[in-house]
Image 1: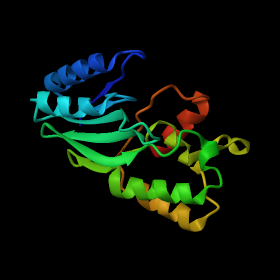
Image 2: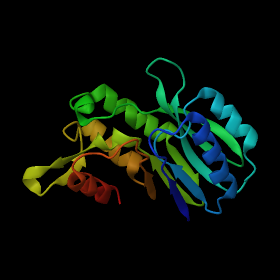
Image 3: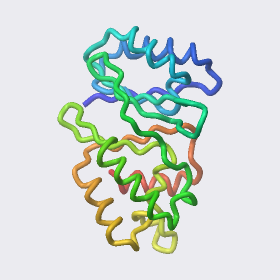
Image 4: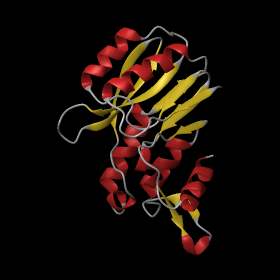
Length: 193
């Protein structure tokens, strides 16, 4: 499976993002394009994208920055057969401090992963963790930065996490900004690999 990664320079206008997204998707010859971070900035751009796509072979994961003025942002879409499909999910947290000891938020993310963020593309099972949601994992520094599920002490959540990731072939982690401590992040990515 051929995957193309696209990342935009910070500060591009919504119009520049839309124009580039259309061009990249219509000209790509890969199986999947992963757009990291905010692909589109405006709700109106989703419809504009729908009207300008012509490449029916490529699939893509894109993100809408803001769907409205509330906290509902970083909304995921799956482009397939030149259709822009709303996955009806958005980033739930950005930092490990938001998830630490928050069993309800962890359960909600596991539900989102299982029901809305698993895709099958070219016979591969994919799972999307958005940016800081990689904090669903933690490093145990005293044990060589060994990685485990953030709430591993909760047996129900821990087994739910193992079930969600069991058959995943490829993890996608589109990011908005670089995350700190790349040593720890690298270990988390190795864990998922």
